[in-house]
Amino acid sequence: MKKRLSALLLLGLLLLTGCADTAASAADSAYRVGVVLKALNSQHWHEVQSGMERAAEEQQVELLLLYPRTENDEAEQRLLITDLLQTGELDALIVSPCNSGETSWMEQEAQAYGVPLFMVDTRATDRPLPYIGADNRHIGELAADYLLEQLPEGAEVAVIAGSSLQSSHNDRVQGFTERLQQAGGLRLASVTHADSDLGQSIDAMQQILDQYPGVTGVFCTNAVMGLGAVLTQERAGTARPCSIVAVDTQDDALQAVASGRMAALVTQAGDEIGALAIETVTRALAGQEIGGSVYIESRLLTADNAKQYWDERREESGNVQTADR
Image 1 (cartoon, one colour):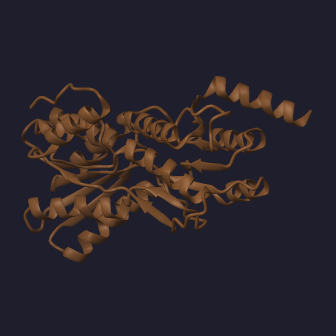
Image 2 (image 1 turned 90 degrees about the vertical axis):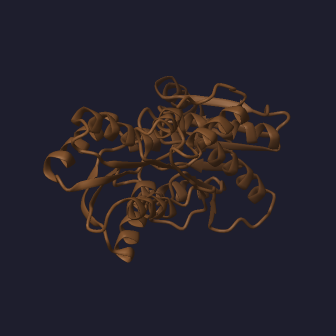
Image 3 (image 1 turned 60 degrees about the vertical axis):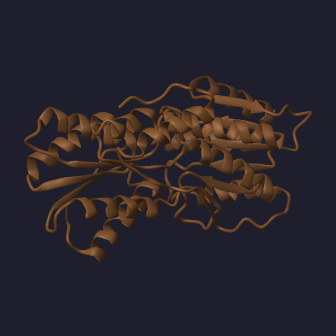
């Protein structure tokens, strides 16, 4: 009875949230892997999904992928993880946590079912769980290095960050601020959290323009917030030139860099993260040692190389559309 009730709960959650049960069929699969992402409401998360699906097909993995409606919905994500463990009969579980500091319960529940747990895109901060994704502190360092090179000594910079509960954003801020402190030359005026939301980032950028007239560089810890900052700057006009640097590889942000609307973008390719996660987990299930963290490569893109990078990604995905300058 308990298992039937749990299955009914899972069905209800899938109707409210989302599921992609894909890749190899149960009869053909070598492993069954459950995935719970933070959301599927942006190009980044769709690319994580597509990378996982591609790798799962290649590795003959049956993939059950779930996600809450928003990146900050801890309660909904917890229900999905709990019920997936109860009904999924999994060989492994991959999670991108909405709250990096609340993962010990996930580990305990996974261990109760004999299921190894891995973090993707966002590392755990309360438990030493295996992590697959970008080196987010390095992303912050790359952004800082760019602004240190571009801005005059004594210039002020600001940060627009995502959720303070998520290590991916916190690590980027830490890498950025520590590099500024080490190098000297630039002053950090403020760090504002906008929860990876376009509207909140527009408000945050307007606040920076109003309260800190000396700011000439802004680091946004994802592309959505970077685009919000760009829109706000453009409304302000040419009287407030500001170098905006963001993170991710979504098309509209790449085009903004290629056209000169955004100064730079540090790459975090979702499809690479998704594929690497499935490949890493299957190696671990086969008995190979994977270590604590497995990173994709991140690059700094400017108007000089963003168009080429964008076109190469579209060709690799089978979409031959090219970016316009």
